[in-house]
Length: 142
Image 1: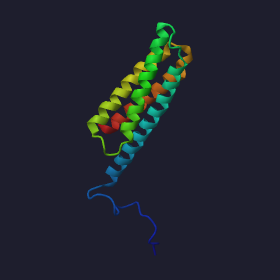
Image 2: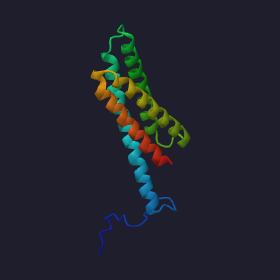
Image 3: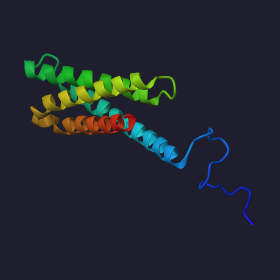
Image 4: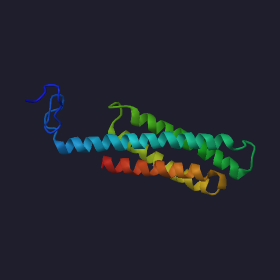
């Protein structure tokens, strides 16, 4: 005899909307995992870029100013993207798609700028990791 408190995951239980199948549950789980991974990568990238920007002398050479500006911009875009991804059901899919694509582009551009500065390679890698997470999440949306 089965314990009434035992959870059963092999069939649809109460709480699932009608028509939710195992396949759509798997897609939902993947969507949520990819969304979380993207938000986490955005947070890590924002932190790395903000740190990189803070280490640059505001009165430094022109190339240092570019690093500083890209760091600030990337940190802001990544932070905004993380907030959009954290807002459950308050943002439509198209808004999410546009925000994540913008984040992906800014991260790639920033990574290229950081590549030109030997001390910024870890920040460039954080940007690339964020861009990869954004790409994977965009694939989930398609």
